Length: 139
Image (tube, rainbow, N blue to C red; front, side, top):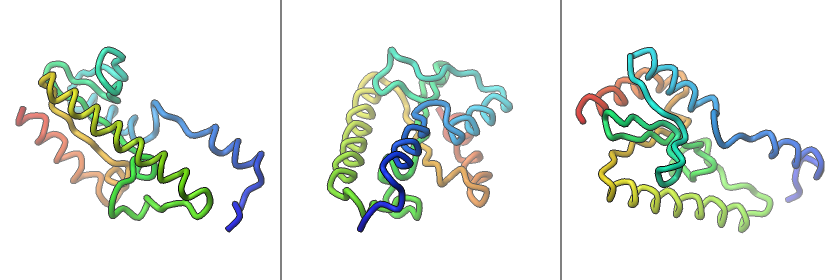
């Protein structure tokens, strides 16, 4: 099956996808800040450069895109019909890196919270926020 966009349009679309300061990430940061939590972002001294670092709680938060991190069972994770093998290698590589990062952080004594972007949609937002606060105060 051919791509629905020409090469130039596809290239432009892909170049607009950000790795840092994404909308889901900013949603979580604004929520945490409004609840009095203070944090650092994208700490280069920690494995995987976590999206949010809460040193007081020895906790890091990763906000993952469902597609890019292969969120199993999620309607937003659909394997592309073009270049399928390349995409699966890319996504599986991301998952492998996620697991390696998690192992290194846990070995260093950090607690890890992973939030997938689908959990920040309106239908799940309140429950996600409540769960996040519960996880943080239980540390």
